[in-house]
Length: 127
Image 1 (cartoon, rainbow, N blue to C red):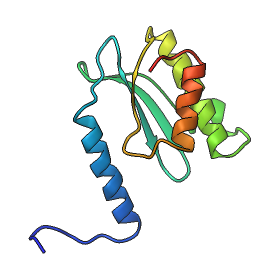
Image 2: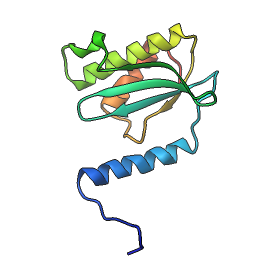
Image 3: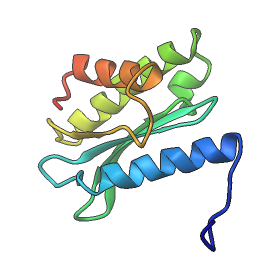
């Protein structure tokens, strides 16, 4: 075994794998002023979406399940992810953003991540 390598187990292994995938994705994806990056961060309980202009280093719009309009909403986590996707698309369009680059954050494009992306597309955000 190489020095500096630590064998991880359970959740630590999963988080490290997600981090590795996210770094690999970020090598190719970058947000500009015309097409900022829509980043999705997922935890066991919540989901956060941010529209980021990487050239300036600014967050243009954001939404999460912790927002007051979504926090007490009924439904499962996928339904809440749909609400977050619609809300972030609405806020991005209000900020003048029409198209984004989707960054799934190292997560698999299924379930809550796909629900958020589909809701953002239905709300009029192009990617």
